[in-house]
Image (tube, rainbow, N blue to C red; front, top):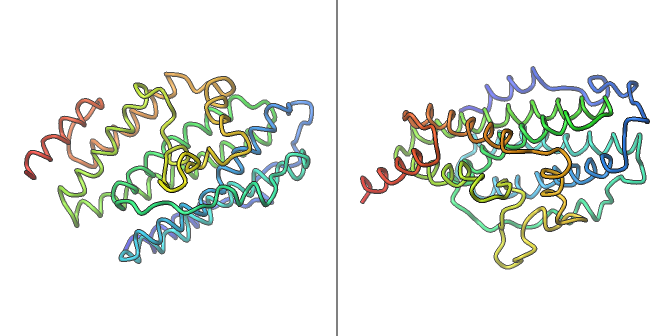
Length: 277
């Protein structure tokens, strides 16, 4: 089981909302209305860890080890939403999300293959780590910069934990797991071509609710994410390339292949498919 070891590692690195955030250093003159509104949107988006956890527990019912780890992941992800809301409560209470706005992003996800979902969320953690690091550079107010830097490190650790479960899946399922990871990896590593941010919160997950079946579509401003990335924090091609490199670097080690591009990964995926046939 991985859960006991991961619990100890995460417990040793866990930060305290009251004592590890420098609340007293808040500089009101350095927080703009524009920046404060993006904090609200991120707080609501992070609340979507709730339906994601419900999905993970449902689709991994036969894997008690992974479901136990969800207790740690869910706690830390909800704390991200909480710390952003605490920032607003203290300094911009007029923008604090309502319970209705939070509840709007809780809806049922359709069942999906668990290995593909695991890979999708592994890539999502890498992407969030980079998004939040970029956001920290864009913000000018020191406390929120510290918060984004803090939660970005959490996302990196979450990605590392998912990678451990992916390695375990390969040990148990071999090429079935490799094929699942390569399939999703090709999609995630082709983000520049798709010209849209690929992340679990903006992918369609419930056919019956289409097109309002993404987390982003249920935000107060459904167009917010693209505007935040393109016009505000300016998550440009260089940042995107960092995300792709990190995904491919980890897949190279995981799959035992030299993978430097989405094309390399797609060739490997086709080799697996041919061997299976």
